Length: 342
Length: 288
Image (cartoon, rainbow over all chains, first blue to last red; front, top):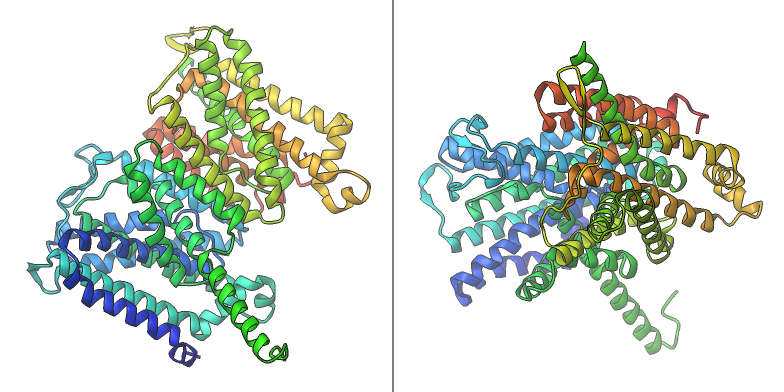
């Protein structure tokens, strides 16, 4: 089954674009711009986590920020305590993944409907946000790391080379490493989606009853998809924490979950390129609108979300893809005198 | 003895609070099976209506009991016409759209009124139970929670409109076939649900004060109450509010309000694992 990915030219084009960006951008752009782009790269990983579970598992989570924040806090606490960043990075994947599995057990094994899933994930995020804001006092500390309530955790260590805590990455290296993470996550997800497991989860997305009548364990499949997505979101959170060297409870905010949804919706549900394009477009748009102080960013985000649902429910990439395919068939039909569609 | 009485009163107030928060949402959910994610902001809108009109010189009770429900009810109908009705049959899209609306309202109100707490005085002051001081307004909240539930029950049970609503709730296609315009029923339901939410927001305004982000602190409790209750409006809201209110208030007494919220969620999760359709999916099935 994996062959289908390995034969898809689009896959190689995407990976090549990613590698080119990783190697060429640091040469042609200045440091400040590179640091800006690093932010997009981190958020793209976050967007991919939701793009995967929503587009290829049919799980619409309204609380992806819960895992993002959990990964960020895990990384921060572990890195401050351990003094290096390799193990914390692994933990930042593993702990959200396990938490996602635990939450998924209640959701999927209870066979909760989509609406309930949305509500439960949203409320979990709200709760994390409240709890994290509540940890201001000195008694809320894990080892050497004080959680700091709404002030957050400052001076989180910068990523270092595995095994050498002294060898910290400079901003350009950090960009290249993060770009590498993004490419790896993309490749892994593409292979996973094309595997037998991925095909089954797409089948479940299309028709849950039929998939279960064919003998697949729908609950377990959804649980695994959800846990993988949670782990990737946690990884993105860890990247965010080390990139900013700071993390506060806003990592758990509803706005963060909403942003992820908007990126995926804008780019297109059911693609992996879409979420990445969504991040770039909308973060750029936010940057532009942010310079005009008149508009509240939350209001803009909400308005974009409503417009997307009402006017462009499929997203940019699938819409463009359909336009191109339609245009191509039309052109061929003209050439052959209307007989191309056999 | 006095302490027990005060604690019991607090528990009942917590239950009444959940009933008020969730009733409007429960009506919409029971009828249309969608959750209005902008519910918190509808509450906020009710609160702002009361604060603004009271500060402009309108009698406080007029603003709470008449202006807040009317303003939010009309707003709800506008939202239904502009957004929700385009998304019937696309449940997840309607959740996304109402969430967008929620952020739009939060941001919009921040732009207009700024991010500061505004308030009105709490009517009636306090009364003494033994050595303890209890706000009389608590009894008002409890009274209105009862009143709202009784009113919904009477309308559903004894009026023609209630009969039509119940028919649509039970089988929308069949109701349509018998000549009921279900789209009108949905619109009206959404309006009434919004109006009750507005009333709740108005009643809460003197207690909590109003800020643009106040909805975020209330939606968690409202959503959990509704989905734990299940599809029956009255039995569901009442049973889950009683259960969750008692547990969360108990935990709040022992440890503080944040863990009270956490206890609320954990209870709801365990309950949903056992009864995925909510309490009324298994028990009190045929009730309203």
